[in-house]
Amino acid sequence: MSGMWYPEEAEVPYKVTPMGRVRVVLRVVPMLLVILVGLAVLLLLRLVERPLFGMDRPITPYITQFVCKSALFIMGLRLIVTGDRMKQKGAVVANHASWLDIFTLNAAKRIYFVAKSEVAGWPLIGWLARATGTVFIARRPQDAKIHLQIFEDRLKAGHKLLFFPEGTSTDGLRVIPFKSTLFQAFFVPELRDIMHIQPVTVKYTAPDGEEERFYGWWGDMELAPHLLKTLSVRRNGSVEVIYHPPVRVADFDGRKALAKYCEDVVCSGFEHGG
Image (cartoon, rainbow, N blue to C red; front, side):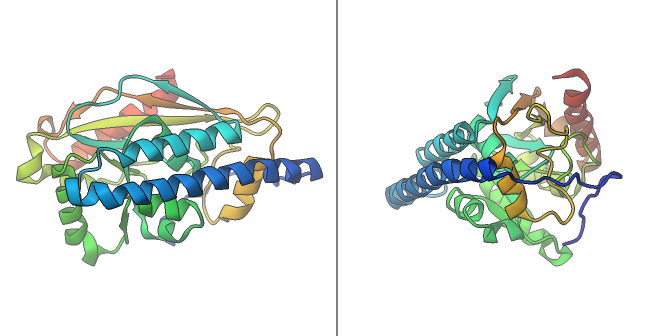
């Protein structure tokens, strides 16, 4: 996979203790139950929701939100939400630290992710993503026009798409430069004057005694070991989702200006605590 990010300091090895393995089992079983039951209910409701409402999903996003809130509760990861969630038609952009962002951001607000195509193949997370209307993209130049059309259709339908403009995940302690390519979808004539963008900062606080990058997931880290680490810790930390004021797309000259503005605002959440 291209576009990976690596910190200057290597990952600190983490050893799962025997008691930690017990905690993994005690958390995985109820998480699996909640996710699988939630998916089953969601898919059944879609059988009714799809013919009645088409692309609109007035009911099933609440199931997704419940499942993700429950998963965070089972993990013991405290969710703190700051700021007002956007009510206008538009999209959300956030920094990307971990696979945990999928649960965190879905729990905080009813949104639809835009994710790299690889996510579709992840166990459990991929199933949840596909069922909840995630837009999967392959980052190939020849697909750019197709993606723009998909984004336009979904945004016109009133879906709040969530983008990770960094293009990769980090250690959760910083924001790397936003790529402006995906912002072009907001500037099509049919959307430019009605679209708003809400920047969001996601900040993880490590469990007591663990390094501050504990929740970060970067480079070529494998999913399974990171998942085990997160589920094995005796007491998890917290995550704060900071919703910054939304801005009108029409107030910006182009995608690069909008991307830089959003990057600076998301960064400010780390510098000033929202």
